[in-house]
Length: 254
Length: 229
Image 1 (cartoon, one colour):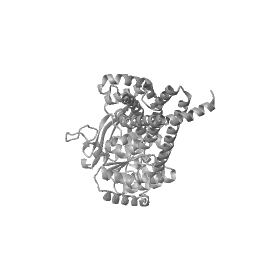
Image 2 (cartoon, rainbow over the protein chains, first blue to last red; image 1 turned 180 degrees about the horizontal axis):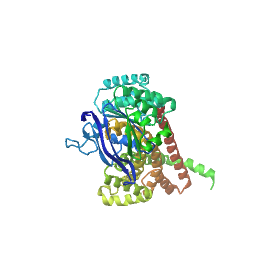
Image 3 (cartoon, one colour; image 1 turned 60 degrees about the horizontal axis):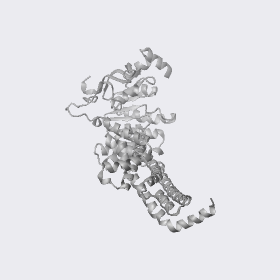
Image 4 (cartoon, rainbow over the protein chains, first blue to last red; image 1 turned 60 degrees about the vertical axis):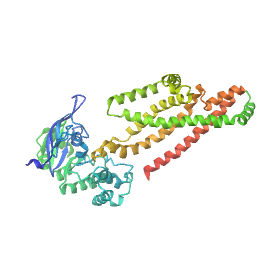
């Protein structure tokens, strides 16, 4: 596979707390290619979320490197020798959180246009138009002027997804996007994510939804104790698991 | 002690000294409180941002300042400023009002800084993470996302601080600054009556703080209405 297909290269990523007493990430290496729908599964406390949050440096890794579109973003200085501005890289990585994190003091439309206007310098009309189009795609165009508190959990998460998409990112990171939702709202959020995957968006998804992983994922990663223990196609991971930890995990969740 | 006599005396004192209480006393009390709140809030904001700074020495200075002010009695601080300031700054010689105002400001700034700091830190960390993940800078995140939400935590507590300060200015009477409590001493000296001027000033303090509390309540309800819409 040519290097140009590699969107994010993660090399020997480590995240230690209290010296090296707690190893949240213990040497994870993986390449994320354009168009991948990479689903990360594993038991609680396995380092899945820490890994995902390290990709856009919401967590600062203890060591290792993350090369995003040719730039090692863990370095203080960029390739041009100037101080690396992480904001420029973050705007190309959309992120969706477990607890939505919509801005409660702004309307849905304002939530979606704030960053495009203030960060990318888009005009307000252009940002509004794009936001309305995105809201239409997730069936929420009529809620553009509502405030987050007036929406259901599923609606909030759909807004959070299109808010990230409004920045036209090259990759979308999902951190347990359905874990805080009532069961009947999980489906509507997963549907949006499925559509996104079908459109060719590169996605990294941490989730406990095994059905989604099996159906939509192009690559499945199994993590435990901060290590990447197994990787493969959905068929290989779910139907022919090799690692005993993975076999044990699947026997509990399937 | 005879309640009827006290009542008659209060009526007499009101007729004779109302201007001392309602003009001079209240004027000094409210002006001291207003200066303290206004300058104290600006200074407090500065200290709060120092405490949350990335630069460690700034954090230490702000932390030590807050701890010392909060850990020593206000009356002691007033004495210290009143006697030490004119010796350190010649401009403040015989400027008792200014010295007391500065002491009150320095005291209030420490408390206000804690109100502002806790108000900002009470905003969910997820808000910062969401803003930063969209590529917003630290500054943009602060001004667009964090501060507008923090202000709802800060303003009600700041209002309470204002009410506290109105009462705390009574300590200025130690130096005969002219505030309400000073007028008690003035009237007592002129009439040899103690209880009557105390009751009168108590009523004035109460009305002042009661009105302020009610005004704050209206203001708070308005802030909260913004949450529901």
